[in-house]
Image (tube, rainbow over all chains, first blue to last red; front, side, top):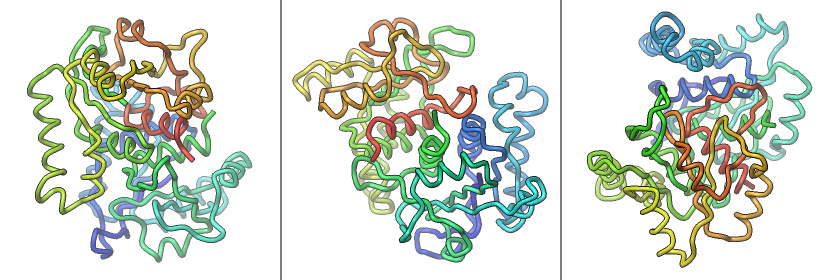
Length: 180
Length: 180
């Protein structure tokens, strides 16, 4: 599972590097731990942002923080920092000895044919190496969408409102793909 | 849907009033909007915490904030502040002209018989007035559990780790009860 901070769109559809939200790190790490995700990659090219993510990681996995809250330690131990999407894919290839299937997510864009939750769940069950990629800010840029093997169908709720936080979307999608 | 800040347990199983996390307000409001929840009640007896919630609400629903981000405005308009669980239930009775079924959630406690997601979904579909209550900090105190009509089965992921943030749990539960 990856959380991409660059390249993503801002509100004005310009390509930017977004800032890390520490709540994302905690929530997504806990989701990864709950749903059996091997690694949660925080992807950002910015050195100070990488440093921030590593500081959160260290605070909760070493020393006082680890003693204070072991459930946070267990979750954050699944987190890794990666400088780019390519580097992240290379890292997964090194670990898994196969190229991961790149599945991207988007709140409003839809491809025909897209990837249904049932199809995606089938891939998870088949034990393929998969990189499930979430965008921050106003979402993944077109170039990243074009790199993907599949675009997962958007989360649909009860209404047509489709503006969840990436934390909420990740929770729902992981539950749909790997929940009991 | 309600988010209870008092009475809840702290790490040492003492009854406390927890502090509001503003991320909870945003994420839960957006979830409420997505899944057709009528009102998201932020429940706290602390005057300064009620004020904090109202300030967030006002910032994003009136004036500059509302213009800057209308999706946030639409979501936060569903948020209401309530001083206690009893007051929240009274308010729902006034609005709905019926006593809401109180469904509580807990990450680890399980009742026999509990309430399955299928059963709960049936209640949602039957258009009953329901208050779906989430606890903050280390969870709802026993007295609140005892008041409840039903305890929803815990969210189970792919592993036995059950330490999601309340934001993530709310996302998953709403999707299971009202997702398409």
